[in-house]
Length: 76
Image (cartoon, rainbow, N blue to C red; front, side, top):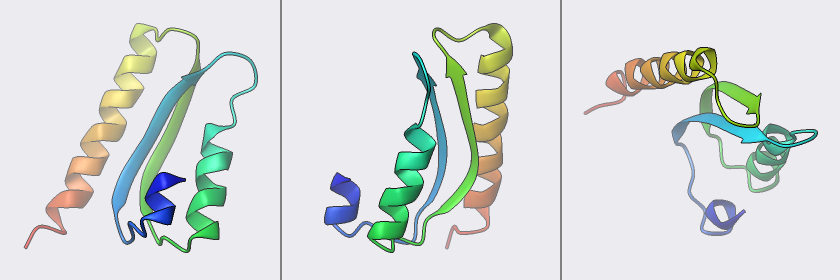
């Protein structure tokens, strides 16, 4: 929400995180991006329950690598 209020727009990002019961951070992020019309380019989203397993870390690494590839196209 803070990034929206500060009008941080037109960014490329990767969302990942853990949750305890029902998750929902991605839904909240989408609402913030829409409310503030931030026009962020989200590569993927990955959420896992509790502490990460090795497979979760592999998915996060894959997402980060996708983000890096997208950023290469935006480097001036």
